[in-house]
Length: 203
Image (cartoon, rainbow, N blue to C red; front, side, top):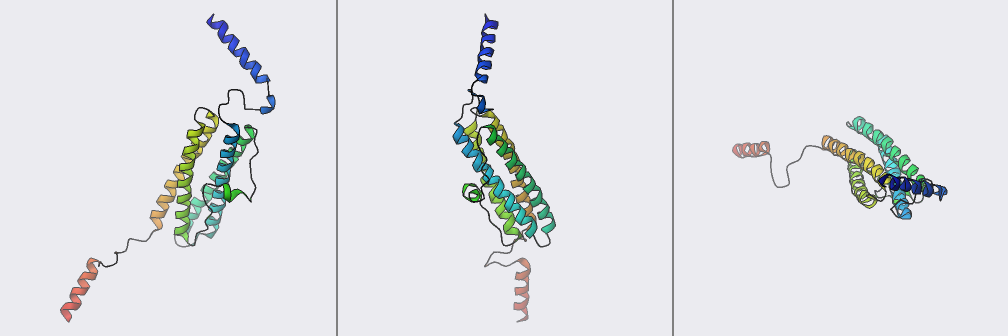
């Protein structure tokens, strides 16, 4: 009897697969709200594309003694963000949606902002902020997809892992380019206090 039930279930699955074939990968077992899923993925697509543009600008505009190392990171991250965008766009199509590449809507829909940065330190800081925003918003998306859309969840989890690496890269880079901490206002270094004592003795 167990075997018969199993066969009957398989036959039912086969029958459902033949229905609504125009939906492609979206079968009757798909548990998420498809329209919401596509909207979330399109917002993630916009986020990745804005990150590509920001990293590209920073790659070409980086200057100073740390510019070579920073530019190499910016270029690598831009390429990885582009790969993320391509994978997200492909998933949107699988769900029967259309990836939105409209340049007029990118900044509005992107979770992160496009900030040009006045110098290398500001560029790195803005990229770090953008990665932290992506980490938080993608974590929320992972929760939304859960078991309702495991394919989209695994996709975003994979991208999330890379964004966490990017954040670590930017944090390390920032520490490497920041100038040494200066004494806070109203305090003197030991050398400064020694000089003051010497000047007092000479007086």
